[in-house]
Amino acid sequence: MRNPVAPMRELLKPFLIGGLVVGAALGLTALRFHDSVRAALADFSAPFHPKTAPASDVGGNSLYNHSKRQLIQRIQELDRTIAEQRQEMRRLELAVEQAREAAALEELALPPSYRAVVGVVTNRDPASGGFRLRINVGLADGLKVGHPVLANACLLGRIVEVSDHSATVLTIRDPNCRISVELMNRALFGILTGDAKKQWKQSGTCVVRYLPRDIDIALGEGVITSELGRAIPPGIPVGTIVANDQGEALDTYDNLYSIVRVRPAYSSSAFRVVVVLVSSEDPTASAP
Image (cartoon, rainbow, N blue to C red; front, side):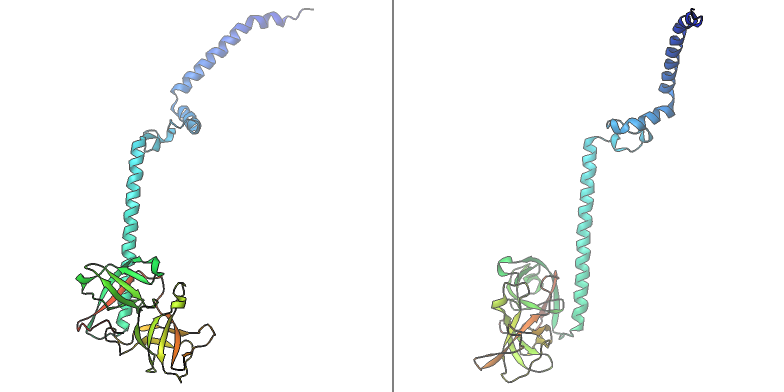
């Protein structure tokens, strides 16, 4: 028997297809002009279309609204700002170190004939093991060869070369530097020099020669500048006595005098600011 619904289905098929086409067209038209739908589609498709800004940023300050040249200029401006801030930070750090050195210098109670000239280390000579430094003060600031130099409120060395606006410092770790010293509170005098055997070690020590033979010395005793030095005021901390290679505090040289090893009091690298002591009496500074 023939299905009576079949002829009706065939008759209605063109109308159904036409309705679907009309409905799709109306839907597309609505999507085209409906802002919220457009925004939703734009936000959805933005990750896949880098040239199109998200709808939420349309008309705003989105990076997509800037040209490549503008972005490069902005990055350069930020780099300049960061460089300026870093430079300002270094300036402030140096100011803090200078203030710290000045405060520590007051505790030394130096003679009134000495004035302090603050300098900054500009170079550490690697060829000398870091035992020669260059600072940014010189003749224009009253410096002369032989003037003592302090770091961390302890004896660092002395000036060996000087120009108008810079000077070279020979530290006490160098074997060519000779300083008149004494054991703290004991009036035992000697000459301090750098230890040539330890010159190339980061923990380089110094030695004090010409101490009396028959003395008892304990590890950890302090060493300071003596009143016998004409160019360096007395009482400046130099270092502390440490054990020699045999684990003892004292050596004897040919049964003539005693030798002790000293660890310098200043930190070998943790300083950028130094203080040069300039005397108004201008002593001959070449002597220990």
